[in-house]
Amino acid sequence: MADLPDPDCIFCKIVTRDIPATVVRETDRTLAFRDINPQAPTHVLVVPKAHYPNAATLAAADPELAAALLTEAAEVAADEKIAESGYRLIFNTGAAAGQTVYHAHVHVLGGQAFHEGLV
Image (cartoon, rainbow, N blue to C red):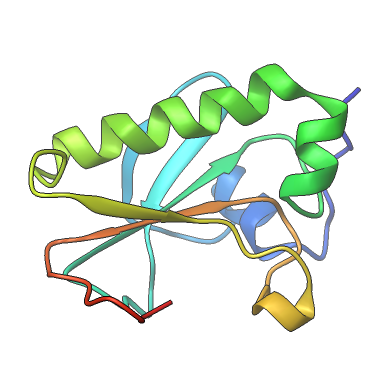
């Protein structure tokens, strides 16, 4: 069962439209919006509308929703015209991995060549 929205979570507030964001795609279960601090020419975040603290808890609790995030990430890449040239999908899980917002999300990055050795 999905966690209830967290009133202190910035992504929950974006999902409920209490905080504005540049939305690029939306389904009944996911929302995709542009990152406010892009690390590539295309940098979109895809989040579940339900609150899960990270990708691991999402995958354990709702594998279908985890799969929906990946499906939407691929749709974002197609819409952004980076699917053929290539793109990265990144889940950060935990502080040591660089997670700063504790709401599961996948970064869709593309529009530039990523060189071997870059993370």
